[in-house]
Length: 346
Image (cartoon, rainbow, N blue to C red; front, side, top):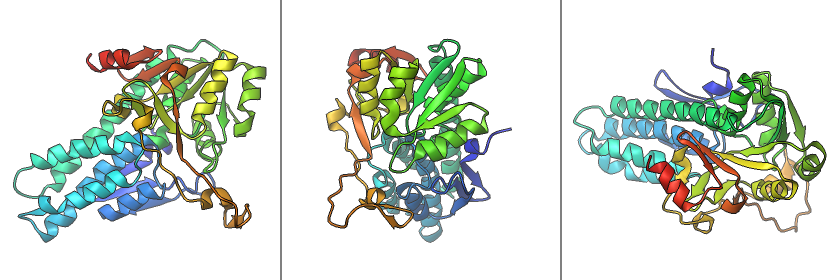
């Protein structure tokens, strides 16, 4: 039976149903979307988060948009779709999976025949969703093959079933390795300011009875020196053509620490997260979010009113710091443009 995390995105009785990740682990609540605008808001407000997950959510959002426009203008509904497609792509600009999913759905739109488009687009969204889960399971097996028995690993943010269509990328590797009795324990960075590690990763791992210890972000270097984890395993919101990685803020620092302490640095991401249009990390737009995420917590003010705030959500880890890029198509050791292109070409 699928865990609750594996059901974080569902289509049920004409509605897109999302597990609200803003209130986990203390509350289990669901947000239902019946209109495309609600799907856009769910992505933007982080009801759903994680690059593959928001791509899947956006695909279902396209089906919702088609339903709305067909009901009003059955003959020219396609002409009214563009604004909604743009809104979905712009909801979270760093993760390439949004653009990838919308591009796939746009192609389906252009080949939709006469009649109600919702069943056709819903079928396409479900196919994309299933493919993501299958990709995660495949990359999980590839990544687990790199781990030895009694492995101690460190992960950052949440790249599990909650952040994908199901199963997970970084946590997919960990879940597969745990099933092979290779995991001794997992350390999870708290991952400020949204605490995805504390709230989501720890919760998700415990759902699968995988031992987890939460640490504050600033303890990672000491952990590497004293505990010598075998790997740092992270996901990715976008991988550039040269192998540079955009991921949750703090990932770059972990990669530097790992290099200093001789710890392997693994990036687990489906090939849908590889952006060949981005030559390097310099071409990736880094989303910045509200200063209130740093200055307030649960409506309690933490910083003086006149303090300036810089709140980038992601950072760029240079390819030279990545030991292995793990995808559903296989592992790329010391990734670079030549190796990534060879992987994608078969």
